[in-house]
Image (cartoon, rainbow, N blue to C red):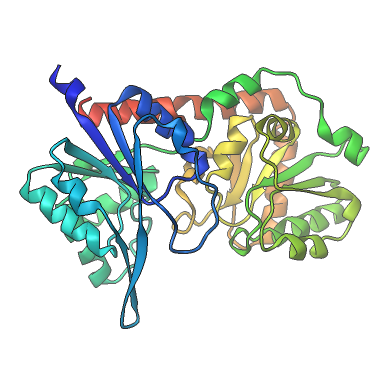
Length: 374
């Protein structure tokens, strides 16, 4: 009975729409109060989730920026009041070592013997200054445990001297329940009528930004065309690089720019009938989205700069990795994958296995409940 009375206080920097599924699952299975920052300081425009979908939503917290000399620090009002709230003994937060209010919050929770857990990317590289590492370690002294998106970060942090017993890999997820239903539906193939050929389809889905290095896709396609490997390419998404990418492609008949797409039923059939998802820069949640509909992923092999979701890609099974910035190697990996994996249904099932085993809200909320003893 005592566990049922515990209320988990979640304080997250923002509420992106794509986190709705995991937040709903937490809301359903753990007594939780949610607080979200009202904006992102990097001015990135990400659609917010509908707060009415969370029974435990309390309010937004006002996020401001403090400038001290050349340094910029985040400050969010309301943290200290939440630390003092007698309802809360456990907190799950988005950490920010450069947010002044969080340091006071951590100190106060430490004095009041309240447990603070963080949900974070963690550290993916050992290449950092001693001062930065010292700051992370001091912050970690006040943290009861860290939920990390990937095993790579756990390995690096353990090697850097962080206590591995406090590091829990929670992975990441999208709308798993929806994708499960859509997997078993019958869709029309959107490519046969558009391209009027049977060439394999390469696809990218996500924001069209410079960091994704999407120009490499058209370059790889040109290399493969010279080797008599014909391909179609689809870009689903919008962003600052939309026009540049459009202008850079050669054989425009083989490239399809759909623009942004938000209808998951439509997205599902595009991903289901494509052959490979290509993300030359960092891959992020694009890999989870693709694998959820049985689409293998090829991305670069620099794991220190990759997003943690690259770990969902099992080399030779659910995708592959090419040498970073090497378009010739990207072309070779695409060709090899198509030659070695002719049966799409076998590949689809391998992709589904990865998502079903770890990259879903059921796994995530189960881990949170176990660690927090709910």
